[in-house]
Length: 520
Image (cartoon, helix red, strand yellow):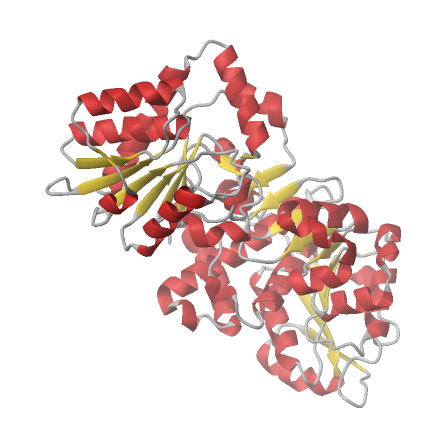
């Protein structure tokens, strides 16, 4: 399992839109950096990386797709260097009008004897391809001959390395503009583009890496700010907000007390998985409020937890919380998994309380059904909502149009609710009410299993219970999402994608964290 980001951690955190990247480049050029010199530098780094990915030159044929702009210029410089290193290079450039610098590189490549083929079909059979058709900022939908060429490439089995973004993807939303290259690798240039970290792009990006070519930090911050709203979660940032260090003379009551309210006779597993996720967080004390009929199961499976048996309905849901339950005894509450829609009284009680709260699953569905979103603004403590897409749409029905960009939609939901919103998906986006957003770049389809979200709820609740009063809660939530996803990745590597059920996932949380810390 690899969780190490290449390049500086600070640079790895930045996420930009096409317009922001354009402004940053303009500042660099205005300061005196020649465009031609920067192109040589960037393309040289791309060449070094692709040579590492595909080191064998003997009899290897490389196809290069050349666009009309500077992305095409980058591709031509890479083609030149590959040719000079002994690779057999074929170039396809279906454009008659090129930017001046790109045209100069085309002319020089021709003088070196690099053949330019008439149709993309001539690249069939190449061992691998370089995609330099379009870079960041593409807005129009691709059609006609260009779309046909891309569709042909996608039908072949040849690996494709895309420069900056796969041609045809929207830089900000990751949506497909008519059609797009299905890349094996995407070498993102300078700074991470927002679209590469959104779910629609994942079928096209392949393995994404950042090519850090040394953009001045001052120029980056002049455009996005010193603490930009959008940040990519990095290992260093996540680890820094985990409660890994404890005073030598501490005791359990200083290490947080979490109350989990979850489960029903029908969904006993949801309570168990939430409790196991909480246990893995290292929380000092764990209490679980469950229907009375579940107490023997919980006591047997999580013996260290204090089990509070609740009066239950005829169908085995929590009818109400126990009389005399004092929320002041807890540093945080996690509520929702497995409750069913009959547990309204319990959910409304925790919403009325003043403890930091993680609300998930049926807790969210009950919140949506009651129409009590204004209650969250009135709460005296932070609330974290962890919806999947369906729950998100029920909670925020007016944000449907914003879903073109999941990050923007999450930001609006956080502003609207006054809560931290964690929108689940292949690329989790987490936003605070002020707009600050963290995007988790790590995930695996192995986590697309029932119960995985329950584990996250327990893990997150345990970390919130341990957080100090001055801890930035957005960062704690981000750390939980990152840890959870890396455990899924490690489990999938060991057991295959099909072998990661939610119960197994709970057993990977602590070993995965230990392995990550040891590797760093």
